[in-house]
Image 1 (cartoon, rainbow, N blue to C red):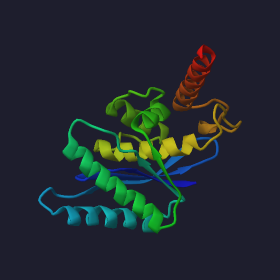
Image 2: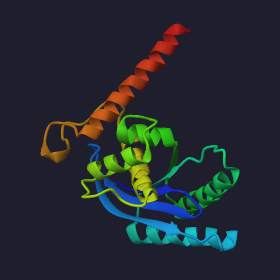
Image 3: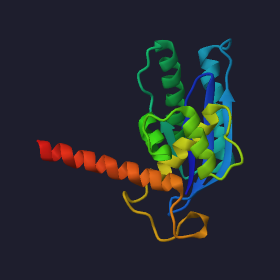
Image 4: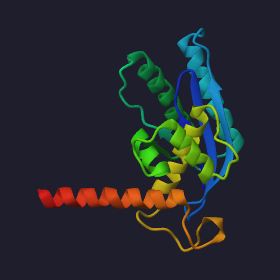
Length: 198
């Protein structure tokens, strides 16, 4: 499955494409950061983002689109711009008839690192490791877009299981996959404890 991950932003919008296998292995395809200038009018900035996403979809033909869900921040102006860029990304998926999912920042971090409060550096390092890249994609928006795509791929797999065929040609999950399973198991245990406490 080919997945387009989008890290929405008005000044910098990360777009990354991966190919995901059924055993939760992922292969890097492409990544880019669509940039717009604060000196442009808002309509032209959003048009630039839309055209950039459309170009990426036409070029790489993804099977699905994953976008980071906008969350409240103290800086209202920043979150408004991010929300507008997110709307453009969601609309692009709809125009191309592609299935779409939104993932929260903590969900993405937990999927990639096993820790929902990981910082951008930790996420970038794990993205490079999972995709077997020689260096962390830069800027952070690029790495984040790939993390979103990986999160989407892994969230679609059966929870708590890994097929027999694993990455690196062997029988062992990668460190990232082990971290993901551990985080998923801890999350399920937490939910079960809460249910018992009721």
